[in-house]
Length: 297
Image (tube, rainbow, N blue to C red):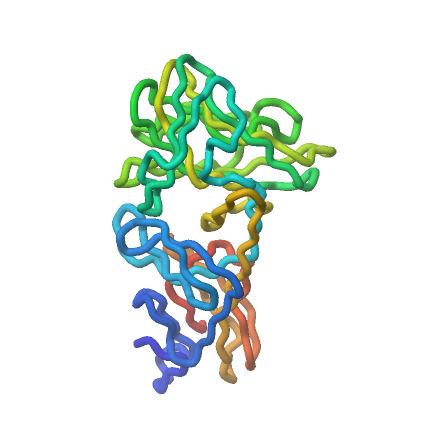
């Protein structure tokens, strides 16, 4: 059943399921900006403001739950138009390939030798702060090993990037100041990557790079993102300036007799939250940002 108040004593007083791509009766939602999700076709999709986002597994295409994300800012000002990145002997042409959102807006980068590509300075960062780095990479010809991510980290060394095999999604190497690396090869051939780094004590900018590692290559990077926080959230497109996505606000009323809610997340982990009767908004600082079920215990 998918009801807010359950009539039977043996069932939880609060029992919200988010696997039907619809909100339960008695819940309200707001988000004063658009936001991205993976839809049932495995494509990134823009959801308009004040509409909940139900996320799907990009590989299995099953619904994972509702997204409850905090406010985040993508500090990378050019997330997809790579011709606007600086060149290190990498020739960039925009709009050549189909990107993870299904449109032809992914750029082509062509290199003639190892350690060539494109990079972009990202400024406005806060010193001694964790940042989540994420994006998508795909190889179309030539060398398949691509170095992506940030060039400098907390010790101001070049230890903030990762090297991936863009055919398999495997991590070939990672900097000593890179944490919590995750990659996945998507059915459309793009590799999604994410990890976290920490800025140095006086550091306010980084270079976000995309280089071929072992030789000539034709490849693409798309969806470059740097956001303050230890956990990467959904993609925030930018085209010339930083962009902020507002927080998801999912609210309902806690009935009398409920003091603990259990959140069941998309990975089947759970987290208990202390609550009291009355108006309640799901916090955006939970362990994960996709909730499949919420119930009282």
